[in-house]
Image (cartoon, rainbow, N blue to C red; front, side):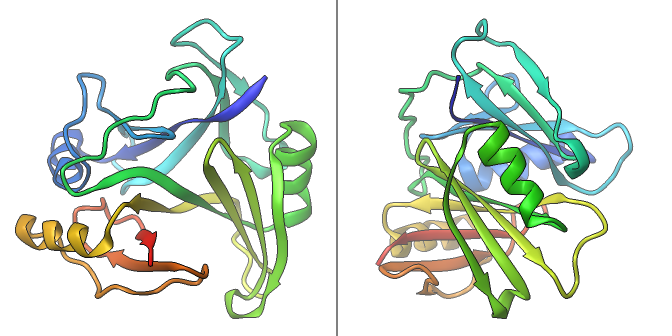
Length: 222
């Protein structure tokens, strides 16, 4: 049974460079290039193609599987890499890294078919569809699949749909956005000023460096 998100896999063209960059942002990776946050693991892998950094896979926690194993999930016409896996323990709370980031708030998937995403994530995989709404400023429809204190956010831009679905960006949670941004300044990490978030009661900032070129946001309670 799937109970939470387990791991986000990011492929990078040069592992050494990416490790040094991401460790400035998120803290030390283990010997398998993994970072353990409160609600998910992040793992870096070197791409054999040399392509620019991209989020290549998402795995879903299934504790009925043997530890440290995974099983492929057929995503059908979505064409994205999914798997059931058992890498972390569901009660793992993780520790905030030095700059106060402690979890992933949401992962963004750009899709050309919102209805088929509902079929895949809600009907087939049993992930709760928390919200389905039209958002004109984003060009169409947004879906929010919620599980294990993390959200998979699907954007379907009906005016400019992507040729194929792809994981686009990531938003990290911190406890105090002012303290975290001050820590970024000390580490030489570029960022936007903090601003009021789209979700009521939040403040956000855009991370502009040390994020592997991925669209990356920081969010905290206001």
